[in-house]
Every structure is written in C-alpha cells, then in structure tokens.
Length: 70
Figure 1: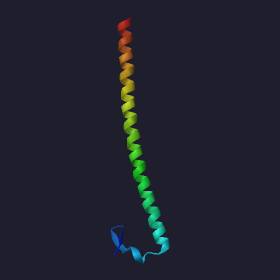
Figure 2: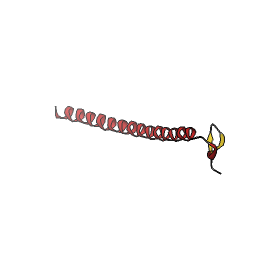
Figure 3: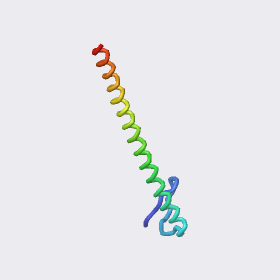
Figure 4: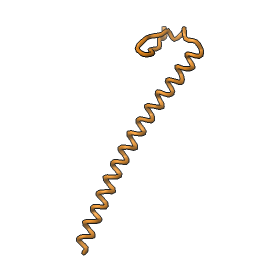
C-alpha cells in the first residue's frame, strides 16, 4: 500500500482523487523548486562574499603599492 504524508498524517495514495494527485504533484514540484532556489541563493551569497574579499584585498594591496611608489 502506497501512502502519502500530509501534515504528519498518512493517506492512502490509491484513494486520492485525480485532482488531489494533481495538487500533490504540483506541491512536490514547488517544494523541489524552493530547495533549488535556496541552494542557488546560498551559492550566490557565498560567491558574492568571496569576490568582495578578493576585491577588497586587491584594492588594499594597490593602495599599499601606491604608497610605496611615492
């Protein structure tokens, strides 16, 4: 017997209506998209922070070099 968990309650999958199966499929797709979006957001946030560190280090290194050239 195939079951579906919804809000911590089990339902028999075979007893779901076509509309309920369609809703369940869309909910599953939305959940996957939210997870993908959260992953992408964390990835871009991490990349942003890393690039900012590289830029700041580069700018500060250029400032030090300019001061030495004077």
